[in-house]
Length: 141
Image 1 (cartoon, rainbow, N blue to C red):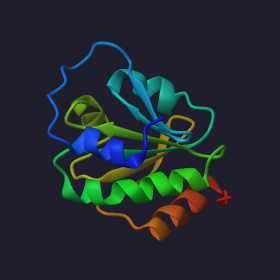
Image 2: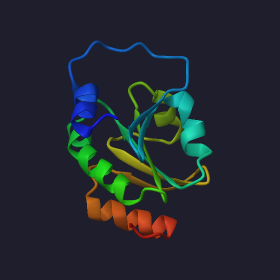
Image 3: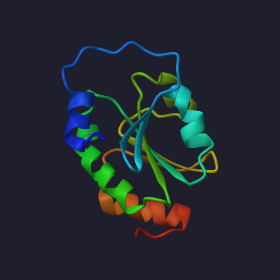
Image 4: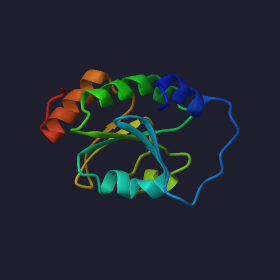
């Protein structure tokens, strides 16, 4: 398992650039947080059994970096109820276009394959939890 520190270094570090892949990729960050590419998006988000919160980010985005620990923390609070996914829009421009994401960070709340809410900009933990509980009609554990 990869902890948040290693994850952030991997995403925001100065590592060698990775070539785009033509395969679906789902990387497990923790038990309820996954990084996907465009080709895995349909399976992991659109066809998910539970509601899904998608964090649309880019490596160069400072507010995205700031929000990452909060997103992981909230993911842990809804394990088994809501799935949490992140997607790098620099590598998944088709997803940005399809869901009209023009600013990042953007959080998309999906239920049964449909966007139910879009949160644009740096979102607080409280605001995210209120949106999750209102949109999906659930409570954190």
